[in-house]
Image 1 (cartoon, rainbow, N blue to C red):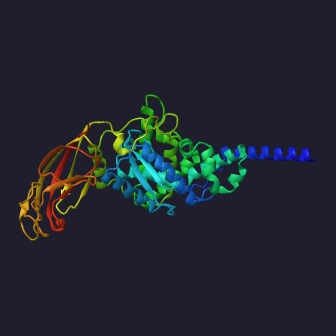
Image 2 (image 1 turned 180 degrees about the vertical axis):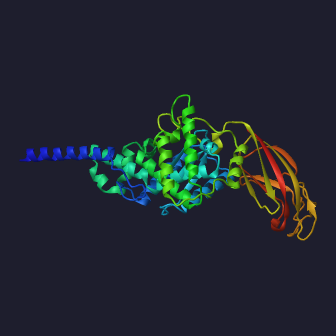
Image 3 (image 1 turned 120 degrees about the vertical axis):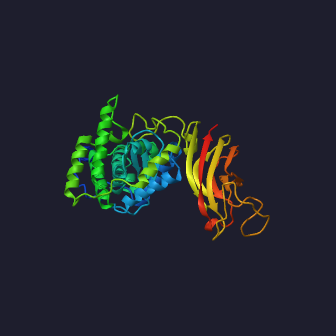
Length: 434
């Protein structure tokens, strides 16, 4: 009797594994509008914790751009779409990566990365909104967590760890650890074709409700199709490797847009987008081949690096405006010990309230002591700077110096009460990296 029971138990286990594989390999066609349901072992709290762990790895390994204007724009665009998405129980974060790869991806828990090569391909804000909306769609529908749950289920069954699976998210860390770590799991993770179709659908819905022209997603797909045809190796750009064929995506997108009550008039571009793209001119050239050729979501081999370390040594320049009422402005330029910096400034500031007394970046004569303007023997209104939290130094209309500490370069106006200053300085910074 015991032998028969053993055989029946093994037979049921084999049948269950066969059924499970059929279920995972041949899922039913999903309703694209439904984002809940499906196999998912993870609570929102666990998903965010998992995403934060992987995001910390990415922040160390990818050349993230920390330029303030670029970061503010991509987050502004992202949150404009998030306002109209179907999931608002998490905080979303958006990053731009300084690499020429044409790609974008989403990390569980609300972390979205867009590559500079993809941004270069976008002609307008609507096309970029389509890409970002697509990645938000992956997070909204919890695609990574559902795919990971399927992997864990199989891993749990094959390793006899069904007890851990049954306890859901409370045991996910142990299973992932045994299977190679969070980075291994998420790097090798691939969405299904249905996942990609649903992300396209959700992205179109977000674009439309945010006031964008949804046909911008179609125009971007056509660019991707043209790019893949031009590829000398015949391989698809990273953004397409796990996606449905581009012709199919174009057809699907047009079909979904035709179902909308859209009569035209949606936003295609903005001045902010033009400024955003122009800002890249002041950054070092993008890196190449950050993605592993073995995985569309993987990282390249070699040493990991954060943003300041990721750039090779070179010269570059950047220009911007410093208003007269500035306390401290982060230039977005990270300097390293040994770099040579040249700063040129011109313009005029009216430093006295209700007066036309003014000065150039070299400042106006000051007086010693006293709380009110002019503030000290240092020249009132002169352009000043500091690196990180170091002591400030005078720049004036021109200064050249060798950097002694690492940190971001800040610019300011030498005035204890600059808030009523009128006017502005035009500043150009040239950096010769060591």
